[in-house]
Length: 311
Ligand SMILES: [Zn+2]
Ligand SMILES: [Zn+2]
Ligand SMILES: [Zn+2]
Ligand SMILES: [Zn+2]
Image (cartoon, rainbow, N blue to C red; front, side):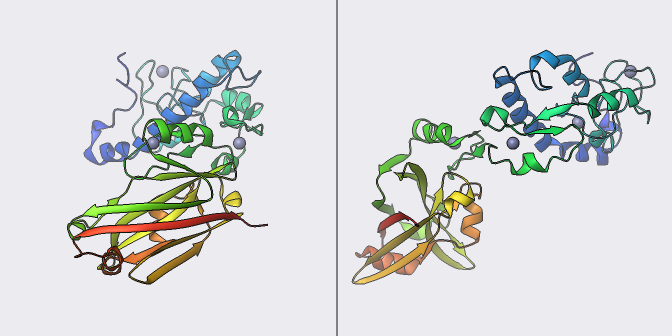
């Protein structure tokens, strides 16, 4: 049978096709998780290592390529390499081996085998040592502190994930971000014809101090009807650690000054979320142009900042 050629004959009716396309994020998740697993160093005698490859394959949904976490079905001919119950609930499923329509026959033997298994956290390759009973809920993995971070670069739609040292290298090498060492910094943002730009994201600056990394963002957007600029800091790490730091940002000109003091947000929160929370220094465009001096045809802002660690 050709790959993907049988078990999801969702083309039965258009309504079902659209529900199948809803599943795309799941397959992205699969790409990530399967990459993680393939990249996994030899990880002892657990289910996600090669030594148990066969059991693993039996318990893996061939579509989502994630483990089947509840009812496991077999086809009327006894094949167990069937898609997961989540998928079965959404689209019409045919057996990938014999093409027979998948009924409602459970495979109790396989469910029993699964029940007896212990799984390591899927973020084991990132350093997590937690293990779980197969049928335990997956709450841990949702909040596992070793789970990889999304690339914090805001300008491009970047799907790279990884731990912090990896992302620091990625930002330097692939996004060519500026790197600044030290806890105080000054950064200039210049833009000609600022009145034409409603939404923009400037190049990220990475700040390196206290042995940690921070991302300095600068964006233009509309707050309601008002065009504004916003600058804020995100911490490359988890929230509990981000809270140990504080920072100030100030911007001014013509004898006036705006100062913001805040706590950096973890990069677990997207730059958009931080922006929507208005958790940073917001500068009305008219004020920003006033700060810029000149004839208001060019944005010229100098953002000065300081990061410190709370004792
Ligand atoms: Zn599935
Ligand atoms: Zn079959
Ligand atoms: Zn974990
Ligand atoms: Zn990236």
